[in-house]
Length: 335
Image (cartoon, rainbow, N blue to C red; front, side, top):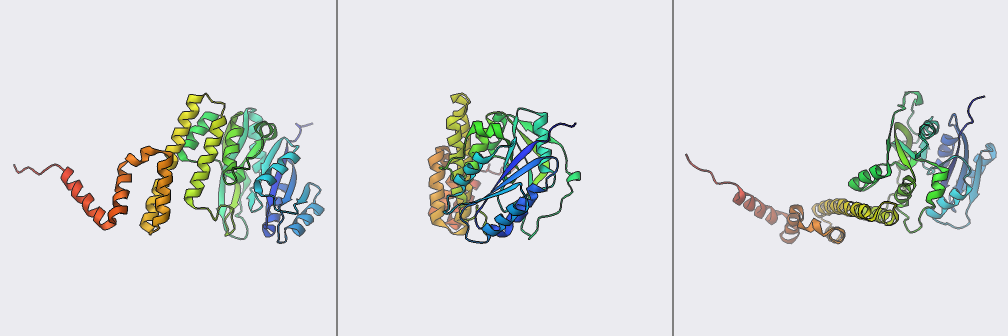
């Protein structure tokens, strides 16, 4: 007899994505070499989600469907799904995203080969067509890289976000339970915080294969938030995690300084683009936020240049900048 097959439980939260739900669920049910179950959590949808979910549950015993009478919000819905999980591994898949063929078995193989790896992720491909692109799983690479918790923090604090792609994430259930639930107070960056918390219990593997298709459409949850708001939420996630990180306090403080500087720089350049686009109010708000999280940003040449532009206008500021540049250039000497 061969080795026992690994089990994966997939949580599929859904709010008014009934027309996309079947694609997401079928992408889980069609996975080879793993035993899967799917829990559809309908968060009080007002479209055809209840009918689609009920049909999926009727036609496959691996599918269970629950419907909320009132909208509980996505974070509480995620946590409800985590309470249901019994499998070796857990996957949270948005109802508008799709797994690629063979992705779960590929991730499981990595975690079986490296027992201290508690989370895997891979590449994803964005698409906006009615159907996801085709992909030959046999051509996808089996290569991967393993990182420590500190290495993930180094990269994430330098980038201002983790390199992890949400629809590709597979987590060891035991590690997820040890890490705990999603934080309700982080509705727009809870995934970042919990990924860091999970990886603090082990290591993370980055697969080179395409593990999911990420659907782009007008009602994506990420729409409706300005770049400044997204950066602010990401910073909150990092600071929340680092406040409880198992690392020694001096290391945690250094990571906080790094993510604050990275965020301040990103917000500043966002403000510069807003100024050029004529949005003076949001530019001012973004600059105030950048200065509040890292005063060092106010001592940079780029900051001074933008303040000149705000005070005198881009034409006058550009003139004075050219004059100052000429004054700094060495004088020509006739020989």
